[in-house]
Image (cartoon, rainbow, N blue to C red):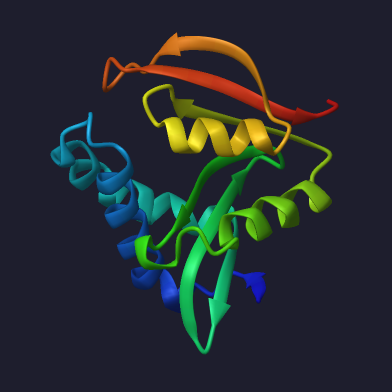
Length: 142
């Protein structure tokens, strides 16, 4: 079931954020994610966060900033390929007419997922901190 994030579960969500980022971005040193952990933890409650929860267990979440920017979509490794990411992205597509995000080009699974969900590449740039190439992708009409 998808529901609004409850700040009392911040530690659970942050554990998913860290584990999933390290796993999905093997091309980026894990120290990068560890170093950004506290900043993300402080920022996260100010975003629109939707969690996918079953039996009081958060299996994934998506965060939206400024009514259209997907800051991240994360599903715990053991629950990936169960359609949770699809349900989370569909939930946001039904709430926001225009969505935009950045994704590392080397994260092929994520690029393919977003492409399959009708996101198109708007731009390609170098991520300032990691020096990795990333796409800016969008869905819908502004």
